[in-house]
Image (spheres, rainbow, N blue to C red):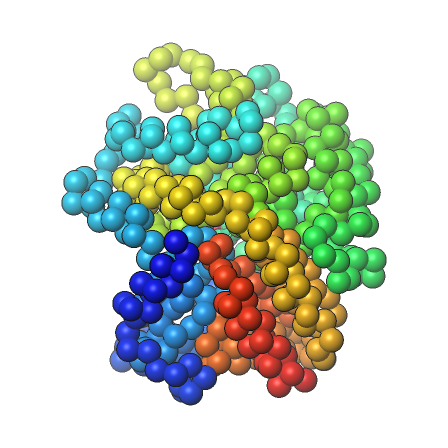
Length: 462
Ligand SMILES: Cc1ncc(COP(=O)(O)O)c(C=O)c1O
């Protein structure tokens, strides 16, 4: 099946020219002034644009027909690979049948069908789902649910939100406030009040070059006890963490850390939110990080892989009793005053249903466990290269951390990203870490190309 996808990809691609022989800059549309690009070094980009025009299976193609191996699933989202027929067909049919359905006081059948199918694969107890359009919206929705839940049960003093240093929870005010990436926080004023942060778990001194979960650091979960001492549990609504922090450089939870965090939350009546926008839908070799680590949160946010990145969609999964606590008041009144014009959008629901079919048919939600050993061997084979100070991996995620160039943080990794792009491989960088997160349909031949290209780029950057 996976081989067939590649065959279709190659057959339908724009006339492929030899990779490695193409110029780096792509043909860009003439006017490039108006588009203000998100999270982009845009002055650099506009001098030397990198454009994609087509995608299928494991690959993108530039407008000139140069093939680029997708080493990052687009942006951690195209888990089933590109242009999967079931998803494409589902979206096309839905667009022709019904373009939009108001989600407030109205609904369409696919929203219920999708919700029912999703809660069959989520960890036990997370059996209510609220749809959003992105991970950022899912995060802010979950934070609001946590505060509203406590208020509904007479604990209205529980409003404080606890995030973690080096966490990424999207770009809305709630998510940035609980997030812990200084570059995303410093420009935007005081953010939300009543927020505090746990220490991060990244510990190169003790855990460098770990394969899978690091041995050291479970005790860092006790930082929550420190915050309880400082603020009192009666003021704390929820703790939000990425079970594996992705955007801040692939920080894998130390053994026992999440279990300990769960226990401390339970002890103090604090809700635990897992942000699974990256880890959800098979990335770690299990349907969710919660299933992989066997720790169930009270609320879980997802996006990206829910619809294979094809139509924007996010969601929050909640334990039934959280939902039920909010179901009060007169029956003609809205119980939870929150939602988006495009919540459960018909095209997104169709895409997500096609995505779930595709995941099931190809066994993708657990394929990362099968392919993880080869991926681990590949990424750790880069250990001997210059400036590599750590390598970490779990499932089909890997990271290579580099020593920064003095006075130019991020530059070494960015140069390697550009080099890989020129050589036909798309990777992602965050700070001086190179992150790899390929589509879950990856075969060992793709891994060979991914790691040999990266190896050569690391050598050249020395
Ligand atoms: C853990 C996590 N939460 C939230 C988000 C935000 O998602 P979006 O970009 O869809 O708003 C991301 C995006 O990468 C993420 O990785």
